Image (cartoon, rainbow, N blue to C red; front, side, top):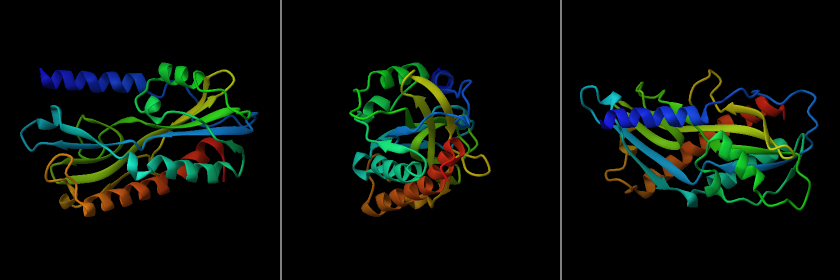
Length: 236
């Protein structure tokens, strides 16, 4: 029963956040000149392990979430995105609550954009950087990964970054383009790590473990964020 519930929940999450019929890049003759950045990937960190038992890869994993708001991931993402986008667009500041974008579906994402406070300066489009559900490409199971996290199955342990960038027209509240952030070979961004990085008890990370995880998260963002922005918005 638990296995069925887990698989159904993963399927529902995938269907609600599936890419949809949206372009993967901005149309070449777009009239977007000013953008606002919303980054909402860095408030929680998924820690997921698949226990070593027969067929356990089909059942629910041992999963939990760690609050990492003090890692300032979204601030870093916003800085890097601003630097890249400023080469082509005027970047405006956006007032928003990160928690409002932590969990989303396409319909409620557009609703939240529509409900944003009216900006002091004109914004043509929002560049929204979101947690994204993707199938496990680390351990080869049926499990889903989302946002930033640490995953372990059998002898494979890694830090991953599963996120998506969407461009939303600020005037019509419609999706102009959407793209999952992938490596150059089209895979989930992740870095293999030593098993010693895994916490001995849930939520109990040493200073050294936190430092290693933070470093790997920064590496993944540095390798994937700007290249994906370039693929969508041609900012280079």
